[in-house]
Amino acid sequence: MSGTAAVFLTGASSGIGEALARHYAARGAKLGLVARRADLLESLAASLPGGADTYAADVRDLGALQAAAADFVAKHGVPGLVIANAGVSHGTLTEFAGDADVFRQILEVNVVGMVNTFQPFVAAMREAGRGTLAGVASVAGYRGLPGAGAYSASKAAAIRYLESLRVELRGTGVRVATVCPGYIATPMTARNPYPMPFIITADDFARRFARALDAGRDYAVIPWQMGIAARLLAILPNAAFDAAFARAGRKPRKA
Image (tube, rainbow, N blue to C red):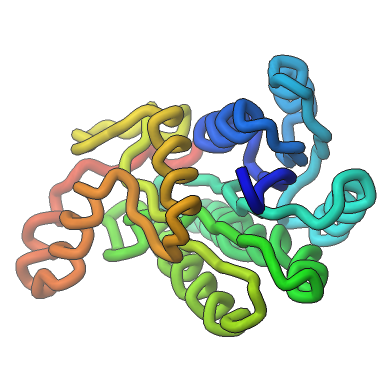
């Protein structure tokens, strides 16, 4: 538990975020939980041993994240672990004008929201000379998947952003970790109309996530089998990749 006595987590109301909250609560962490849905946050906090501090906020709102961070630090000190987990996923097609707003929403939540989550903590962590900033990206960021241009682009951007931040903070005592889930059984993946190889539960993901951070890893793909598959796809020639995925199943567009 060393170094994670206090954990600040976004996207906590369901799926991966809820599983991470339960995992770290079971380890005795003081939790700061952020999500847009206040009712689900309160219900989750009430079910956790020791409860949690909850903050109903949209990660696109930097001011709201700064206020939440200030409150949490005032109560528990600088957290040992900040997890930028909030994310959205919808099918998108450039040909539809209505999807332009969906593209913007996905990029703002998945990329700018990650920046907004970390920004209030970086200076304090640097001054303390400790702590971990962990970003939840995705193997979808390895290649552009058809029908998921916004999601793939957002996760590719998240991976590169986290890499930049890791190098910026090298030598400060602050660690930056990139965690790329494969298929995780959550409400987000429940609507996927295609096979999802190596899918694992959110609780299993949370255990593996914590184990990777405890081991000091700065990059992890969970489950590891998807890491092999994603790396093979990354080096696949464009002609072969295009032929293989042109007719692949696509995530439904936002209603």
